[in-house]
Image (cartoon, rainbow, N blue to C red; front, side):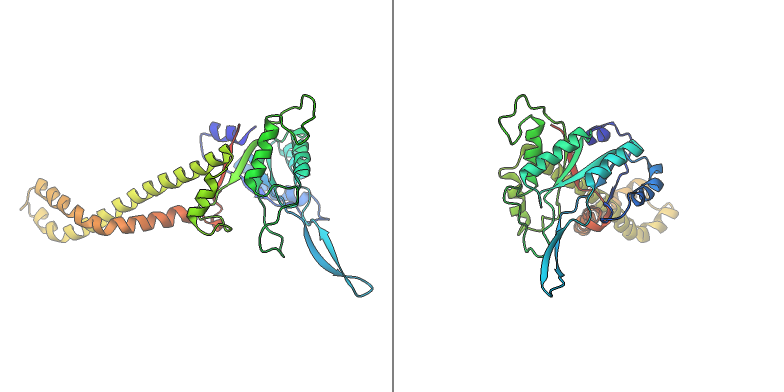
Length: 302
């Protein structure tokens, strides 16, 4: 089932989690031991990360060093197939740009399609440890937007080899990652937003629009709640001392007391609105911080 369908059909909050492939040479049983205790939460899908190749210099017998390239955590596609077969739960493999040519990406997507895996999370991926900036393969996708375009092309039956006869279209549901705090390669928020609008594949652009709308609605709701609570505290705190004795002794009508409280609200707002915005920002962006575990992924189907 597509992730968008899981979200659409959900009547309550969905719980999911992400696993790392085991180190090369380890057994898949450790993956099962990690998943088994979490099944009581009924996850509709499980993410499986992908880690690109690494290289290191190894000392040879003759005293020289040789550059060795290795992938320390292989098996993402196989683990997805194993999870779906064992638990009957949808698996979401991560698909990255780094270390893949467009041909290799297409072949990986064909493998996923043959296995009945309907969902992919596309990411640019991290730099290699020795790289100051991300360097794609000579014939690879340079960023997640280009990777989205390749997946969507296959969804429309367009492959790299244009001479294919009657190619079968795939039907992948595609997830992308958003950066509300700004992508680390962007110099500032403005340029990051403009980059997201210029030449962006429509579904990814829509995803970022949804993210900004979500942040705006959350900020407005949190600000309104914080201002209301802070204003209530300030107004009642100031008015309580002055009117409590009059209220107890019935020396002032209740309607007049409410009027007095209402007159204090505008003055209180001058203090509570800035504080309310600050509290809202701390709450909303605190939820979306990297260490909070809150997902910032957006899914679309086309």
